[in-house]
Image (tube, rainbow, N blue to C red; front, side, top):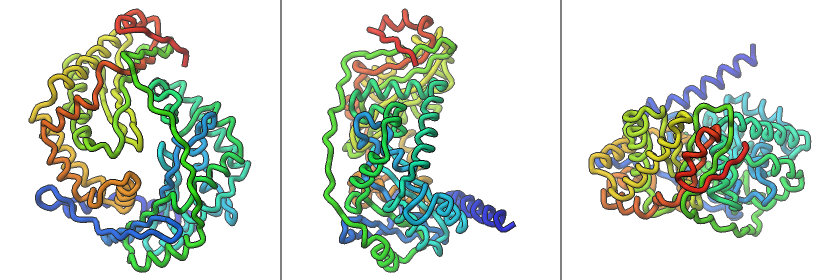
Length: 466
């Protein structure tokens, strides 16, 4: 019965936190599309740890996120998946607690504790009722600083991750995504997803994991964000007490290879004879997160391929009936993330669909967008962005993003102003600068014999097995 009550309380808190956006939306917008200023306090501890605190008293909850500036981009060559494996192991045991004790401790208070690796960073996050803040702060400190990296847990997570990658071979979208990144980035670490590769994971040793943690998990290489029903004065003292013994060290930056240039159409067919539909990925290197034309890019990407009114969806789905989905995105990272268009179609219409994608890219590059399209895109972000900064966890993630990328102070409050200030001239200039429809990576996952002859009309084609 006691276990049932704990589970009930935890699920209630999670549901309660998830429901916050519906309760607080009306309070987030003022006139002129300006968000209520997010009042935060920033400090830098003596050890270099950057701390950002936001008092958010709507509900008695608190969210904590510790971001370490090390992700899969820091994986050693031949050790692909190292950063992600380190992240998975953080909550699987420390010098003082095993994984079960950690799980029971967070479950008992109805909280959450997670760690995950991305391309440029690793994050450890926790949420709970505000009265449990000391406990979750201590837990985050402990799993971040003192993981034990037990061999048994290492082998379990290595095997689990390898199995996940092998299962990707049954998913045409995953196959296309891996090949697209590989072709786009070559030997650059962005060429593989954070989860890594089978070969890389098999080569990782416990010494590799300990060395990665020792070299990157440092206070002067981390940002701590605390958002919720807190008092910043008390929080400063608590953080200092918890993290003061975390010693800073010199951070060694490993130079990265340049991102390759794409020359013409680089086409690869991944042969899966069982497929009757072709997965299509098209794109090239895009922008980084601090690009001065970030907002213009966001808006024209919406116009090109986001939602049922986008150009790609209208042409491929509504007019031609060739697919049920056509999307585009710019994944803006610390370095140039990918620009990607993704769609699919029957094998017999796959190259026709691909040609229409290429035509739409040419049209938007040469002719630009209309005022009506720009107004529609702006309306979308004005309506949706406030929903992404409602809960304590969302605010923590947004604030830490602002700090990680070095975005200007007040960036979040001015987000919608920046959206509204983009002119059609800005967008059309940006399109010509960041889109390159003549130089593209094209990945087709299909039954090769059904599409190869037509694909060759576009250029040289490489055929590869999954």
